[in-house]
Length: 121
Figure (cartoon, rainbow, N blue to C red):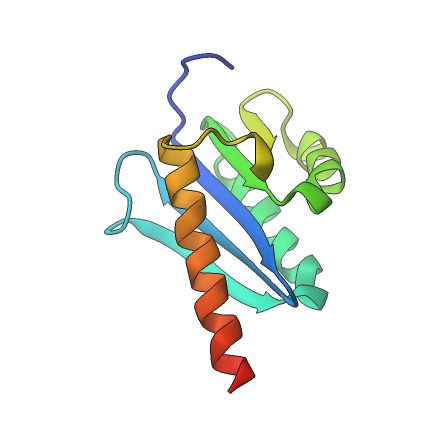
């Protein structure tokens, strides 16, 4: 997809038994977190359903999705059912350090770790 600017960025990540996502509007990082959710990993269908619904509602937008390496192939197949043209799905491990996308993935990673630590007490 080259240097195309995306309208939305979606990040999906796991941390042990938790799964979370962030949806961010282009260039409006923290003040415009449109959605975020953290659930137990066994609630994956709920998270994926939320993301797919968002894709259907924004089918005329360019969307970037970073997904945990373990879930990449399954999630990519689901996205292609909804939209294979305007949506780019990448593995979390493919994010280059010091890029916008990498730094935002760290935000989700931090949120997941905070949530996990709350439940360990």
